[in-house]
Image 1 (cartoon, rainbow, N blue to C red):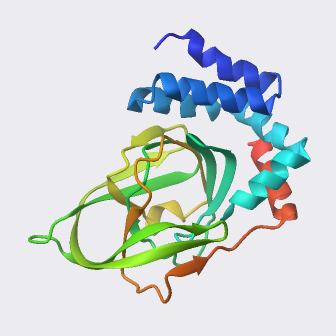
Image 2 (image 1 turned 180 degrees about the vertical axis):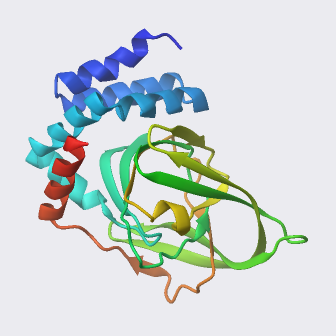
Length: 244
């Protein structure tokens, strides 16, 4: 990868032009969406100088704030999901895991796209799983998960499957990693929620309309509503993040 290509999105952030930034990132990923390229891109975007300017861009622009509010919500797995860029070919998202005594669902899942993520603050523990109907030791409900509307998602029950934990991977602030779409994982409550943990992540092109979700719980209905955030909550978060 030529060094010069990484300067393009830096220049877009510095000039505070959101459209140029969105299109530049799209062009970078169109040219190279390898694990190495995506990991390097998210590492650069999460650099303290870049993210300070990025969050400042949102604080100055009400239109960006409205778009961010429409796409962001409290995720069932216990974290705040803030969507900064919602592009047809990728998403740039911020995940915030607050120090909490409340146990999240911790559903095992894969994704509809590859992604790269950078830990800005705290500690993230990923537990990696494989389907193993012979030697697996966790019997879970298998659902297909897909968007149902702008404010809800759908879950379709497939059956029960046995999963086996393969490994735990613990990462701290300053670490970036790549996750292939098909890998089943969960964010472990025990380590991640001991303190506030913040990650910036970018997705690749969608590979499937749905993803797989493996849960200890049964979902009561096919369509599940999302809990949205207030504008004051968003402004509070952006100001906090700009100071990190």
